[in-house]
Image 1 (tube, rainbow, N blue to C red):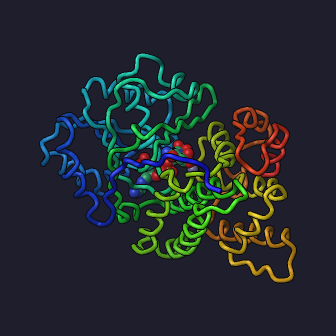
Image 2: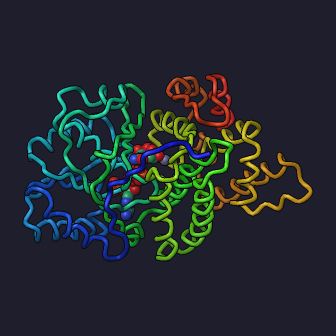
Image 3: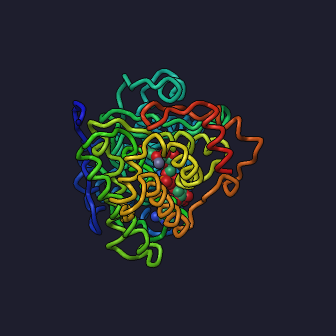
Length: 388
Ligand code: NZQ
Ligand code: ZN
């Protein structure tokens, strides 16, 4: 049975080859000062920077820049961004990049007018903003996180060895996002496939919870089937617009809060992945793939019926003459084959984790309550050791 919920997603999307034109419609709604936020320079190489700047100038904006947002953005960089946003008196934070750039822009947006320390207040303390929020707009260049249409913002504090995500309310969602699938064509394969797995994992975090019959689970099965199909096409032919546009749209729906309505959710793979990220700074999707198989095998006995349904409805396993456990395990084995085909990290060693880091990573892993088995610390350690 679906639980009670209130649903609102305020982000306006412009999707397709003309998506950037959406900027022209949106920019007049905001004041003159725009802080253009981007990463390490990919947008300068592929022409997206020039295209965005041209529109900003044509719309008469004063453009200030905040470049160099790194993958897995750090708390130190956020302090720098807050300073820049204050100095430029930014009326709009325009994030051009992937999840890291958009997450970072959200962190800055709630901190410009905040009198307290942003890290302690929002990320360690989990508080909601009670100050003015500078609006965020986004131009997406890397597909996976869903940050373009949600309130998630994940920041890493290297000193404290913590990577923490805050899921802000709808007032922090991007006001608008421009999604042109062609903008993702220049992604290196490693990032592309990491993003594909991030999408899969987001869906599974919400699918592998609850035992009742609800609409969201059917929607999620469709999203996963579409992703599996299109990912294999994109792997062979990265410029295949049909595949890349389907994946972009699937990623947005995987984490724009819609499929989580009325359900409990798990998110434990992300807790493990974020802790690994805090220790290694590895690519987000790869931290998830490296721990997933050990985690799913660990919880399979507690969610057997759902794992069997996943095997049949998503992986096309023929259940005839097999036990529920055999069906469920065959589903996971097909999933592992798909992951290997994509070239995902299947163990933690590949990401630079060494045995002496295991206890620290376990300490940095938050334990959630919504999965089929609520882990104890010893489960976390054994999953991490198995993933090595
Ligand atoms: O920095 P540049 O030079 O732009 O290069 C980036 C970066 O190195 C590159 N890239 C992006 N678009 C490109 C491109 N290269 C060539 N062509 C393009 N079109 O890709 C690299 C990775 O970018 P990044 O933004 O770090 O990747 P992603 O979108 O996966 O974001 C990862 C961050 O998002 C967080 C992760 O933990 C991580 O910190 N997440 C955010 C979530 C949310 N907001 O809801 C949920 C997720 O589960 C996740 O935790
Ligand atoms: Zn993720």
